[in-house]
Length: 61
Image (cartoon, rainbow, N blue to C red; front, top):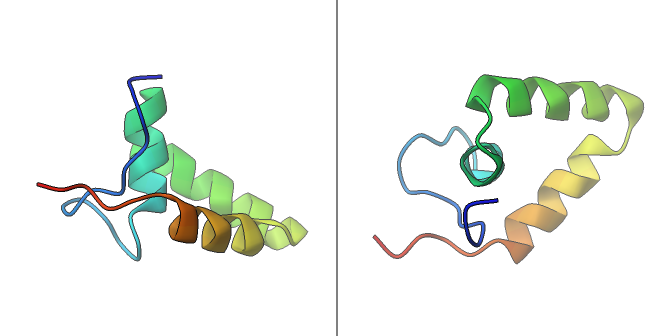
């Protein structure tokens, strides 16, 4: 992991949670977004996304 996870100001769709995870783990953003969609169909994706939205700080620049 490349340091701490922060939500970016650019490259986000809703809150930047998927972009932060993708950047932090070196994954493509679309892959992380597909993962959240799949977990959302199972029922846990929305809850995890909201929790990460609250926990992850915004980037300062």
